[in-house]
Image (cartoon, rainbow, N blue to C red; front, side):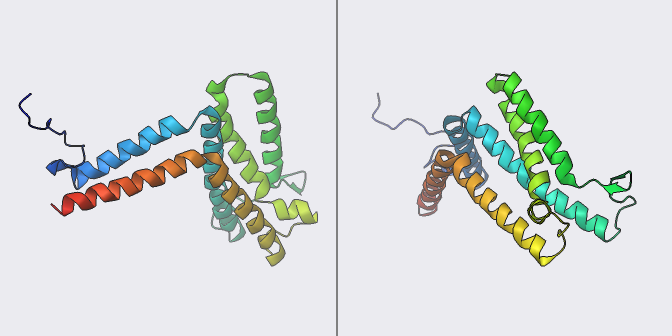
Length: 187
């Protein structure tokens, strides 16, 4: 013991090399660590469902826009003269995911089931107005309001309930990282 403080590694706060890129790497590692500590299989599945829902919903909106304005070389899926709306595929996928979740009792598959559930839910929610009004109001103001309300409720609930502890921890880690960066720039 020479009385000198132990040497700091580049990722430690206070080390001269921890600003810039190394500071960001340190933040990324903190976020990963917080995620591993705070998010269990159930919450990971819910988070996966929320992300899959968001990506699928955005993709569906883009796809239906492209179909409406003939930007793609194909059109709607029609069988026997009947247009198969994408909520039909969503309901079918929800039935499959529900059955699989009843049969497979393993947390190992929950994250995948969460993704499939998110996709299926987006397929249904995107056409919520059609189901609510029992007529195709997808491109009308009435249809847009119904879908927007459903999307807002699901998005807020998903973000809040999915990994509340993780988001709180992430906020604390960001504040801590900002303080570390400020204290190093003051030196």
